[in-house]
Amino acid sequence: MKLWITILLVLLVSLQVKLWVGEGGLGNVRRLEQAVEAQKQTNQQHTERNQGLAGEVQDLKHGTDAIAERARSELGMIREGETFYQIVEPEQVADE
Image 1 (cartoon, rainbow, N blue to C red):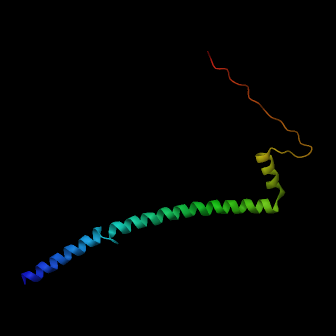
Image 2 (image 1 turned 45 degrees about the horizontal axis):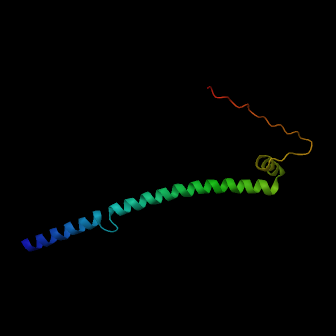
Image 3 (image 1 turned 45 degrees about the vertical axis):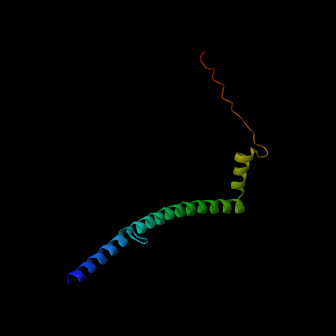
């Protein structure tokens, strides 16, 4: 009878060790859950960015306002009949 109890205890301890620290154990599962959460957050950020880019593409395809805005901001272009003003801030002289 003592032999059976000893065998069962050894088996129980080995199963517990495998559960807590073995491959596929609770620690590994916890790390995988954290990795899944981090990936979900990254995917959400990318989805939001993609939606913004899709809206911008639609504006550029169907509207002239978005194209004109890009031409002004990125290329420095102006429309015919508009006047361009450039404001230059005076340089501040350092106290000597």
